[in-house]
Length: 476
Ligand SMILES: Cc1ncc(COP(=O)(O)O)c(C=O)c1O
Image 1 (tube, rainbow, N blue to C red):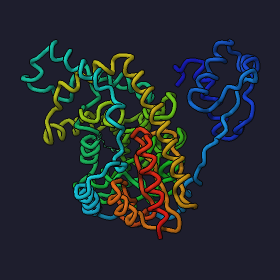
Image 2 (cartoon, rainbow, N blue to C red):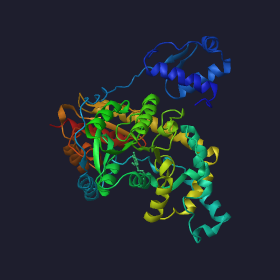
Image 3 (cartoon, protein in one colour):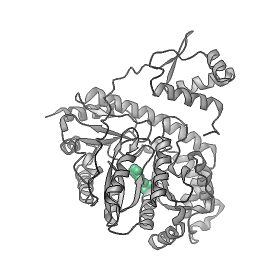
Image 4 (tube, rainbow, N blue to C red):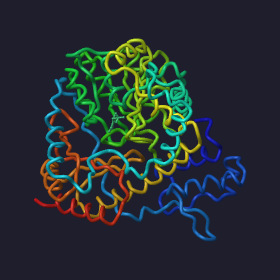
């Protein structure tokens, strides 16, 4: 973080001040002169900070009056309630596959016009032409990548770029510690298989990404669902209590940044505490860092792995959401379990194809990747805000939504414990796909919730679809 330019450090300071309400909407931002004096910065640094905050929607410039904290002129929902502190229910074998398959089968039966169920951005938000050129360059340079055996653990060039880019999440690794995988899904599979056996108990956030629950089911492992907040992620107190009660947790899996479906970001202090607690308990921590680059601004978020001193954190990530959904490129930093994961990867699927890795390395090694991420973040922030505004405008009173500061998902709670299963079916008939809450838990606890993606451009047609969804949600 210290590597951030001064103007960004100053902007991050005021972002926090605004987020926490110390400077409320409509109030005047300290003048440029005051910023210079108070923070001992130059005029150009003070101005750059204000422009940065303006670009990210925190400030508005008023002619001849200076900068003001932007008024949230848009309607907003009440945030989702914090989870009730409760003892986690005993771990269970996961039985999610049938639920997920039923949802997917319905989708095939009624092809939808607006698929808001999948957490991915629209194809036009990814840099297709630049990736095509990078792939052509890689092939011209060495066409034998198509005919030679793929390199174990992944291409050196790709792993070197990943190691460099990991520095922004405050992870210091060498390329040799990285194992390239088929998406984050394979990384999670390998991480779980490295540290646990069929029948073992794995602590997960509740609600949890259904893909993780499917993996647990396929590996014959049990999920212990730990309550998670839409603001701050997994409850470490609940995890500690569960560990005292059940005493057989073999691993903890978390998505610390923009959790799917909640959108929560764990504060750095919680990340540090979780890493320390897992280490002290000798429980491996599996971190899924799929979304951290999709934050509202380009201040990097830290990974739990940043606090790992002993290799107890297995860090899983992918390019699916950030760069190239079609390339299926993910990776794993397995710490203490590196050799075991290498063996499992070889046994399970052999090395990844080299061409996509070379194309990705070429693109990610250049500043074009930073420009792409900036554009993607701005587009997603805009779309997220418009979707949230549509929910507040069209959905029945009492609908709750905590708008995340990044990621691809909105997690919405319907009023009066209505069932999102019914909404899912009716929306499907109206050509709109949503992900009902029952997909995100082994229980029916989240039946009144559903997840929608904000990956698509907010067009007039999408606005109509949101109005329809709101009307269906209001039907008794
Ligand atoms: C939290 C989380 N982890 C993993 C994945 C899957 O990643 P990949 O497509 O890279 O395998 C997803 C996809 O939605 C996700 O949301």
